Length: 507
Image (cartoon, rainbow, N blue to C red; front, top):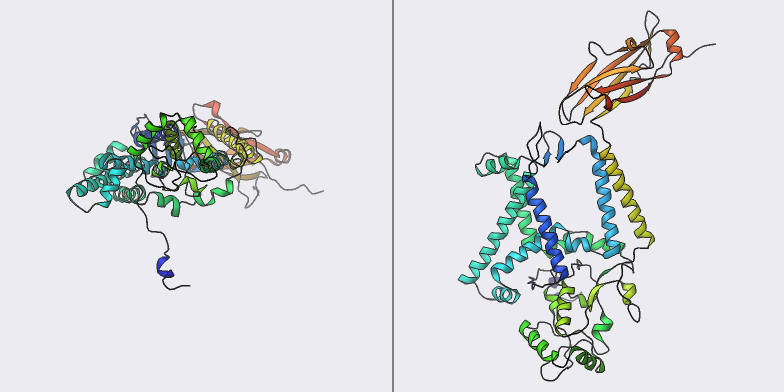
């Protein structure tokens, strides 16, 4: 290795600040809509009231001490862990399904890191100005203006980060009481620790590290290629159209078109002036002149790079850093419109379509074995989850036979079997359960000095039961039924079939 090489290579690349330019278009509007909806749900949900007889009036409450999750009218207990498993499975399959169709659309529009980073960038632009102003502010020496704007930006970031942590904690306690206790110094230590950690984590991830989270920490960007297929739609630059035979070139005033390749930063005012001049000769004529000279449609304005939140140049091809947010599409289409060039130089398209001599109109190709398999699994698991939730009873029960010993022959000749009945109350209020038997005499079921038991919400109870049968009846009894009925709710009676053991008959 040459001297000095080790000094140049580090464990990671030093972050180069990215100053994104604002852009308008359908993808930007969609991102903003998702952001507003996600923030409304996250920040407002803990404050939605929901009356309950045994818990605070909060629509969504994760009651850790009570070992239950309260989600509107649904109460979820640890015994419902199958629902969590189904949700995780559905989330994973949905991620694979969407990726197989439209690449990293989840990263571009729905990921928490993307949503918070997008909002932090918006705050930065409102305080420090548009991209040229932010670049100038970054490069200038520290003075009163820089100190005020940079300080205000970070203060606003910290405020948003703090309220993000506070909102998260509000899901685990009654929100009004928690906020009051927090600011009066009466909250539990866990609340202060949780809010502090989340404040620092949100501030660092969305304000300081930003795209480095996606590049170095998030594993999804690394293994996404496993789920890509030639038919997968992703953000692509149409190199054949954009480069032509002589490459891309900018437009110079007064001379129509000249070859000026690989230019990077172009001032927005210059682009506007060129747009006005070239429109005088019409876009079609200008485009024809470029094609005659072997030039592509890309004018090398660099706006696709300037709007990218991860700072890549999509013209270099598909890259693992790309989160498929589509902002470069909005930027490119804006420039194409200003010159009366056809749209779609940068677009959602598939590698298969772009490889054709003449690309066909973009379409979603879902008729593939992998996509159909994901879709079928997604529908089946979602249907089963809905069915499981909608048909869940107000209690769980389990009857097991005590097998040491399997049976006992009493002094009067009767055969005795013992059973253990476990009941978990999943209702929102205490419930009393009544026990009875079917298939044997009612008097044969012995539950001690009681025939019913009361269990608190979310708790379980154990009942020991014995069954005594005379020898002649025991010889004819293979199994019988134990009925468990919530008091006052006969329609919710549950039946458990149990076996009755006795001595084997000898010839």
